[in-house]
Length: 314
Image 1 (cartoon, rainbow, N blue to C red):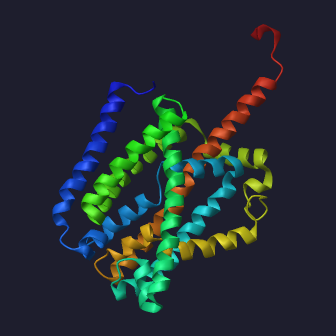
Image 2: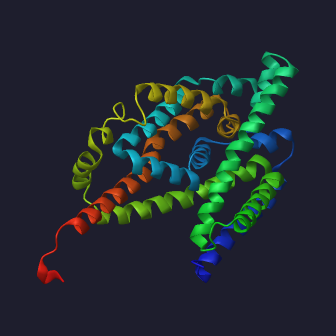
């Protein structure tokens, strides 16, 4: 087991506080609007913090780090695309402004206003299935990560227990407090993740030289590590598709759109997307940079091991 008593104390207190917040938030739930969109009382600062937390977590760190490890600085373009997509929505109000003006609570509700109950039902089923599949993958990877970090391994039984505990905790505070508890716990997550990213980046920058890293990327990855258009994993068609998909999914993905629907008014909803977009590129690039630096250090160690050693070194 890798966890010390201190680690368990931190984990227990954080989870207990999350459930406590859910119970406390319940008293603010007065009606359906309060439950699903926090009574439309969310302001810019809190809305931006919760949306930022929605966009990054354990799994996000893992897959962003992996793509950075595989493609070098070319991966940074994904952060730029994500930031551009959010800024487009924030500046134009694409999709979200109209939804906010209509005072809908969910996206399927708009489908009924625009089309029919049948379309609303179909849209709700598609969103539900997409959410289950998406969150199911995230839940499993969270379980794998926690199993390894805690030292329990990743056997089927261990994974089942960890996933079950996480589900019970999240469902309990979400069901009790609705969007109020989601926003508050998202804000807690934002604080913890921001602090963790700062500390991790600080120690990595102490051990690497940015100029050396830039030269090493070009040497180890070649031009593909710098130019995403030339990178075999990207290319201009993929990047164009990512931009279109980022704009549309950011405007129509309920966990993201709900932050705008919970805002005080349309202007606040747009500002939440704008301010989130201004930070998104950096939040993507930081985990990518961690693993780029790690791979470069690995390659240097491999090269040093292959170098012939002088006889007096033995």
